[in-house]
Length: 133
Image (tube, rainbow, N blue to C red; front, side):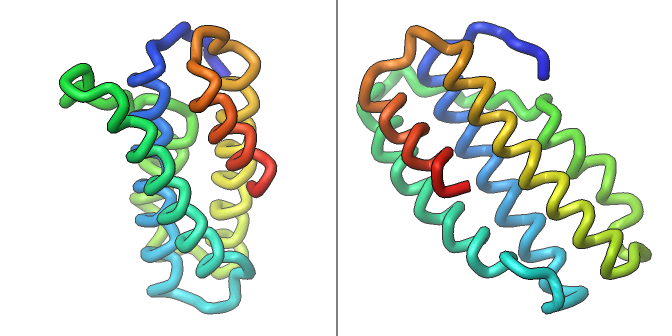
């Protein structure tokens, strides 16, 4: 993963965007199969994580940016898979889901390791979420 120091607002918004994409991935995969373990749980979990992050983001008021970074490995994996998801086998779809879940965990680990200027409340939320992934 490429490391760039980001503001707390950028970090929170990027993670919200990732979880929004995660929900999109789950919903798309559920159109094809119910044989991938963890899809409903991942969707519910992302809803809960987004709610907690939006609450944290509300502490920043007008500092929230209309532009969100969607150029990370997690988002790129999904963009690359979109062209073939409709014709992928269930096993390929499962592999995609597992790959994206792994990238999500890596993203959280990278943020917690490199973003030293995050407020304690944000760090606490991210640690809690990271343990649940």
